[in-house]
Image (cartoon, rainbow, N blue to C red; front, side, top):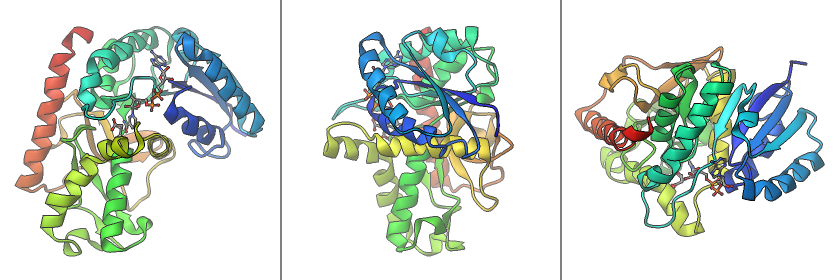
Length: 325
Ligand code: NAD
Ligand code: LMR
């Protein structure tokens, strides 16, 4: 058996975490041979609910779960952490854009970034979930200069999974036959779900669906799915978001399949002309706990223009939150 690793989760008494924590503790995220210590952070008024969640985690008798620390002190939560899942933030309601949350949530990521910089290991791998996820990750990165920027990512896997489902449904093929889906850009309505490089059961997706469907139905469907869920559910996606986090971290830590890639928002190195330093979603492969951006993909003018529009939105968000960085 391996040594236990410490997984810090913020917003641990919220909706997403009610699904996420149990799946982490079961071994679904880091593997069935990896013991886990959960370090759960909440704001003080939510500590009672967090205690109830701890009771339920205890009552599952998960063999891999070695300890659960519940705290409202971020320094305690991040000390010694190997992984940080940053869920704690306000969700949007009907009629709002995710960027409308920047004023309130940006502040959370600026303070947490400073604390991480002080107490956490520079090797801690971080997945930011709280919206607007890419720019919150950017704020965190700017406030935690001791961290390796390559260890700071934002969640795009929910969008990637949504896109995979839409293509599987359209082509009437099982989900596992869809490979090389890509989401470029920001986790917002400017994101670019792109089937140009996708295969369905080994054949080019673009030979199976027409361009009008891909450009006029598929892209807006995936990009606006979060709002569609909010309209139907009255609150934002929770179990599917938790599933995205599990998939994101598992791919990062345990690696991606040889013939496939995933979408992750990571610190741009200038690939595909995207401004270095922005937290932008690319097609990614992972091996030995390190990610790499898939290089050399040819993009059409249509996709390139959309990628640039999403990049511009991230530049604008970075400017709006300059005082927090
Ligand atoms: P929620 O309101 O149910 O839970 C959020 C929790 O965070 C609450 O329990 C709250 O007390 C806690 N919290 C607030 N400030 C905190 C702080 N400073 N430190 C620690 N905890 C704090 O919301 P939710 O449905 O779990 O969603 C959480 C966030 O995830 C939202 O911003 C939502 O928009 C976002 N989200 C992102 C994606 C994505 O794909 N990136 C998907 C779904 C939801
Ligand atoms: C989602 O995509 O479901 C989340 O980002 C929640 C939201 O506000 O849409």
